[in-house]
Length: 562
Image 1 (cartoon, rainbow, N blue to C red):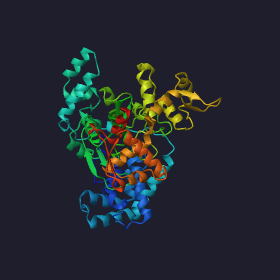
Image 2 (image 1 turned 60 degrees about the vertical axis):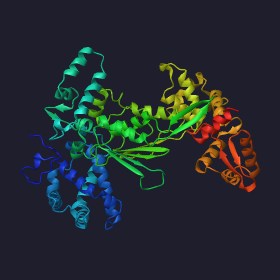
Image 3 (image 1 turned 30 degrees about the horizontal axis):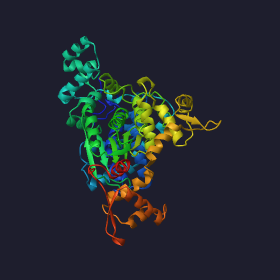
């Protein structure tokens, strides 16, 4: 029997040829049809569906995109033949849709026909049978097929970006010191290079070659969902985005392009330590890169959704379609060895040095975030159809940042604290109960004098080393850092302030006389320029020669010079 392209829909569904057609065609056709109206139907612009119907659509879409597609078609019981026999009305309508007799974008006629299709008995029976099939198989294990390893029909080498192929060759060469291997790779034809990396088999390119090396317009034609959407919002509670970028390109270029876009709106946290100015980005380049690579490698490419990045001034979220791989949970994400959903893509990226071992990306994200004194990366919004990673940009504890930084600096490479060491320090600093990941780390940290036991209990606190660093950043020349930060922010929003503004700033925290005393002390330190008299007195920040610095750093530097 000849190989059948499962993405090529055949309208001639007869008993004679039904066995040569993949059962996935009917399911994929339904996904395409419903997805075209997903925004209109699920987001509410079409209101003629009752709640039950709407929930049924959501359920069907999520199953088809993330769960049904992950099971091997050969193991799936619903055959196309049974669908044709049981649901002829559905097949007929799909044929009409395929021939563009119904579909007119954004037309009322299309909406009416679509609603009619969704609500008819034939479709509801199909929904029910799919639901029942998944229910009976849900607790069984089937290996996830690697969709990207499948042949991408009609894709030729002309559909690949020449510059991407050149970069692929360069990166492959850079991974070896064997001069013979270098010469061999240099002399490869493009076809031989692709064959060596398992991207070309039997003169057919696979979907991995498409997403890794394809021209943007070719990727859009064959796999339009293989893209990244970045939404930027100034405030977390707003619905509309202030800026939106859609990036569709070969992964070998896509990663750097996306990182650069995010960096354009990334700020930095500045602080002064022993008269040395330190700056830590809200979102480190390596953190963005690792989170993005994880999303691209582990996403479900059969899903019609793209990888979404939601960026805010102090938070960034990475959302990729497809839940965690089998056996992976939020609790064990740092310890379990998972099989990548797209092992063909992972294999190539590893072979050309684009990534290290599969599964190490999450460890690296946790390490880079926690050692900077930020909140732990959060996967709590993830579920069976998507992985949702939230990374906070704000440094919550400068003392902890300096404490870890100093420890890492003085250690040899093989002795540096690993992700579980720092996670243990983080949990102790937060006063949280130690988890199964961190309980066995306490002896090591006690030996390093990084933590100390409270009495004879199994409760710990950070050692005096942390306390020393914390004191240096919790106050500056006798002034509380929190007070200085509050005043710096006030002066950022109001260039000229009155005493009443300072009083309102510390409302419920300090009395009026306490506030006046604080401001007078800062005046003595030459932090402010005071103008006017009585109720007309105004205060301006004395910037001296620090015009390029933020207000907080200016105040800290001026105080440190006293």
